[in-house]
Length: 487
Image (cartoon, rainbow, N blue to C red):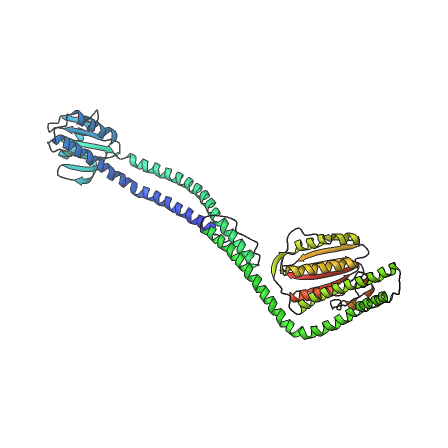
């Protein structure tokens, strides 16, 4: 991803840290020496004020001041010499105070040849930066007179500050690079934790664009991303429900338009076909009933045969009437189509299991392989009737190898369900007619298994009510019936 949020956040924080460390390094280089000098000057002034107060209060020789004096030169690293106007050293923090004493006399009489930069000049003292001509080292000094008339000079070295600044900057650079590396790893990990839920939500939304509403946001962070994931799940449920309602409404609208045109023609055709199909069984029932009444055969076996024929024909008429009622409701639009999302593979497995007794009685072998669910949009109850009709039809006509194969073939948007059985093929001139009501290719065989010629008409009516394709195809060793549904 060229514009990944993870990379952007990581680069922003790493860049910000790098710039901050570089700024600290620059500020150290530019201002640390001056800051150190200012603090050294403050330290000298503080020592001067404390010594001046002690001299004014005549505490110079007290034990309390001795302790305070010791802290000045040991803690603050200040060399101090205090002497009276006659040149006698009153207090000294160094063993050889003569050097500072001579330097103080040189400042007073003005005959000392040293490089001096005056930082502050007042009535009683002078603060200055001095370069020692012998060692080349830099010092900060304050010298002058105390309020009681004694002379003083205080010195502290400042040469070491430059080395300290250099060491400090090198250390800052080393620790800075290490901190950037560690922080980069931490930031990358943190941003990945932040962006992974966002990528998960992106994948879910992508699946939703393909009308796949099975995806759910599973993480349960109690933050804004978790709230967004909850709303995405709610949106998915709402969209699935809305699309289901829209598909149902759209399907009903298309059916209403088509059914209003066909309704008159279907009524006439239905009455004609029913009259034709019921004529034969009614005649048989009437004939055998009259035979029983007139006592054509008096033996019990013949009467039982007559009764069995009447019962068999009545049962066939009952099944035919039920199928006709179902077909009539479908064709006249009285049967409501409810569009829903279901697993067609699971439905087919259940139908095959429920037909196991018939399959074993027929001696057939049924093959169906489905490794994963295949979700489709349709009326599940009606599709169950279609699949049942196809499998029953295959069982009634299977021959030769006695093989039935059920397959689901998926494309990008559709799923094709096909039922193939080995046996005789359908004559080409009959292929278009088999979907009509009461049409029978082999009437003798159809009567043998009790077929009415209505099953494929029901399939046709259901698929047309769903506005989806269906058909039949001959192969060298058998016949395949198929239909398609939206994934």
